[in-house]
Length: 215
Ligand code: ADP
Ligand code: AMP
Image (cartoon, rainbow, N blue to C red; front, side, top):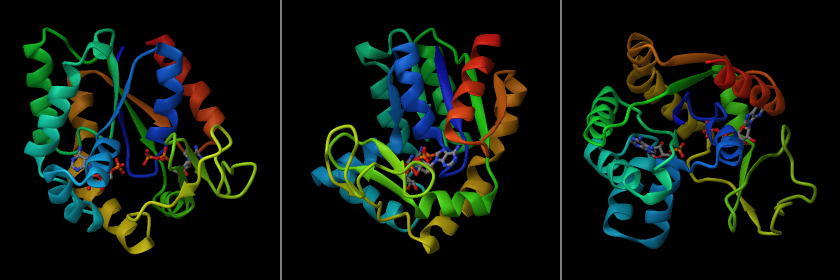
């Protein structure tokens, strides 16, 4: 299964990707996670990416295209992958098509998650993530049993630097301007499935699985 999860920041891509990795035994490839790891490690790429990320902008196409091209060559992608947060521009989508073609592969499905902008702001301001295992929570919609402690591993939960309201609004505008054209891009290729992302996490998960099984 070679899959893209498409949708604005906060749509639930990461939440649903984690479920799909268990279901299909394929890796989640989140360019946001890879970039945040590079920032944390202080690599040259991380230092460059940090400015764009903190400002709510996009990291240059050539950087993320290179990351994904290399990642898709790794052994765990042989049976498929779930791209989460990539592509985000038409140029990235074109580069992905070229990379896949070079490997003799093609995309199976792109699932577009649709969520109202005001709901996205509430989701992102309340998002918390485990420092140790990366599991995501929401203070209202998916709280941990003990405040700020991960249910799965006991790690501390943190709030992302870019999940502040002003930066969130900038990111939503960047999505509308640069990423939303990918909905018609993939519709034209004939791989798009659209899903209402406004329902509770469990319902979205069930509907996503039945969409994939039916297609
Ligand atoms: P994305 O990866 O698309 O940016 P996330 O999966 O990190 O989004 O979800 C953003 C926040 O919204 C998280 O705190 C998550 O727990 C919460 N969330 C995800 N899906 C839903 C949903 N269907 N309803 C309510 N909250 C959700
Ligand atoms: P995410 O974790 O997907 O919300 O991404 C966090 C931030 O990382 C984004 O706001 C961008 O600055 C950067 N980023 C992640 N993926 C991409 C991408 N495909 N293209 C450009 N920038 C990206």
